[in-house]
Structure formats: structure tokens, C-alpha cells
Length: 175
Ligand SMILES: [Mg+2]
Image 1: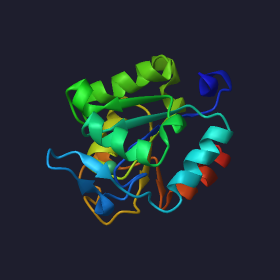
Image 2: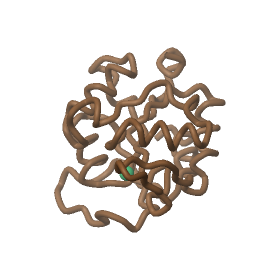
Image 3: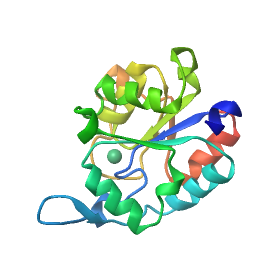
């Protein structure tokens, strides 16, 4: 793992409303997403992470088929070193199995957890899940959908960003 080797943070990214604008999702009759558009700045973020040799893992709830469709459509599969998808894991975030699988996929042990940064839009799933698992949590509040209040103590993120590009600034600041 390049990120592990270079001692960079390992980046775990949610998909819907973190990279992909959920309001643009088009579904097929079977209920899989066939196409969706980037959130402004999301592809630039992935480019930056790739150029700077970060390890990036998609940690997302949904069907494998949906993510294949969306990221193939954008020719964006190469940005991710692995995908952890709820359909395969058998649970959705905030279930610890999602994060446990992501830790395995990162090639890191328990001691390296604080070097992992989970970025997501959903306080109940992404942020609470990351906080309980013990990795650094970054809430991106770009989307108006879902929760925007810290309803439980463990919904409070370590950092808040308003757009994908702000993650670059946060990484440059050393978190
Ligand atoms: Mg999401």
C-alpha cells in the first residue's frame, strides 16, 4: 500500500453525497443506479489523492452493480485501491463490520487507526460509525439531505468540510 508506505493518512470515502450527487442518480428497473454525476470538485479531489499516492478506499452502502455502473461511467475505478460495499459485507454503516473490512483492505492494524480518515456526508452512518470504530472522522456537509444536527454525542465529527476540495486543505494542514 503506497499510503501506508509513505506514512500518509489512508482515506476512506463514502460515495453518495460525498463523491456522487444523489439527486442525479438514475435507476434501472432492478433498482441499481445506472448513472450519476460528480459533486463539484469530487473528481479533482480523487485526482489529487492519486497524484499524491494516498491509499483511497470506497466504503459505501448499496449494491455492487450501482458502484460499478457509476464509476465505470466516469472511468474512475482506478482512483480506488479497494471497495468495501455493504451488499458484500452484509451490513450497512455504522455497523463495525464495514469499518473492519475497510481496515483489512487498508493493510493496517489496530494501532494505525488514527491515521485513517473516514469522509462522509451522513452523521448517523459515516461519522458515528467512524467515531465508534476509532478512526478520524470528517463530515462533509455539502448535501442538504439527511441529518444536519448532532443528535447523539458520537455523531460529532473530528473535522467538518463543506466541499470535496476542502479535504485537500485539511490534509495539507496535517489534520
Ligand atoms: Mg453518503
